[in-house]
Image (cartoon, rainbow, N blue to C red; front, top):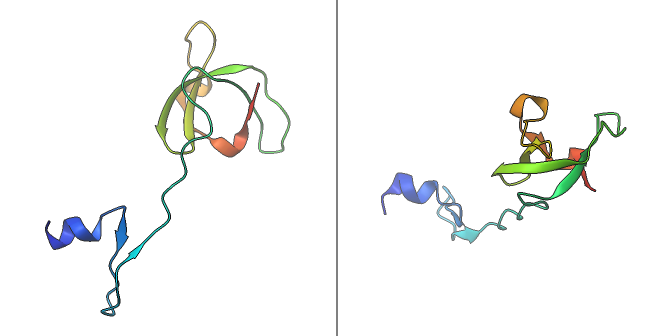
Length: 87
């Protein structure tokens, strides 16, 4: 493993001060999965329709939503997990 690969490893942090390597906490898994039904909440906390279907999970804690017929919601924008609640 090259130094640049080691420095980007999600499992270890290499200290520049010569200290011992440490293991960082693993990123938590996403709360929802593809096919789950959820409600989308506005930034003010009010519900904005739904329920919607989780269409994809592009990264931990981020989702795209669709309607039952497969049509993208919010133009396919990724939505933060904190804005969703289980239906």
